[in-house]
Length: 310
Ligand SMILES: *Cc1c(COP(=O)(O)O)cnc(C)c1O
Image: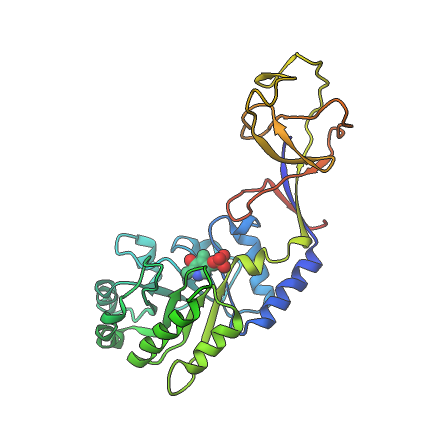
């Protein structure tokens, strides 16, 4: 098995993107890391075609990569870090919105005289980043020297108790100062409801979404690997790192490759550019150059190529 390709039915994928976008007003597509298997450049181009005004990247150094393809506002999700030079440089960019998760950082940023655009992150039960609820009061005076763009909440993926938590946090934040709610991992209707009920007046809402937007429609894509070579092996002959016929005993790992409807065993640990799998004699082997389905986690995999013609 060799090159891995992501095959996509582009028209149907774009239909799906349009449906998700219409279902979530103010959607902010997230473009980060490996670009959800598609690559950041491709996603930034698609986001521009969708007509969104804002996208989100993971870290400051991704801003430049996305900027080449997307001309609107870019939010940096990773909270500002004083040690990150790129994050410093981004403060001066009027089209970049910086997320701040510590009072000391907000103070430092406010002192910069750059009047950067900022989101203030509120700590959620994920306890990952954010200003604690009981410290939010200290935020107000610091916002005078920045452009406050709203509150950021990164809610846990689990559903149980999430809405109640989001409601308590957004109400507390909006009571400190009204601002748009930038939310993750909530259904669009819950997000709108939160924004409508956060304070005396409704506030705006921006829903950040990656996986469900880019990878939400499985039937529109397929990941395949190319067959590089096919070798007949007699029983007992060595192939890969084992003698065939002793597959179970050798404790082989199941591969992600499907041939004739079944996942097949690796003959040896996979290499960077090729892997060997075993097919019993009773099975008709694929031909060299054929493509076989391969199961991948697209949020972490780097495919060799993307083809727009499933
Ligand atoms: C990565 C990230 C997202 C997107 O997550 P998905 O599960 O891919 O939708 C949303 N919000 C924040 C803060 C993130 O870091």
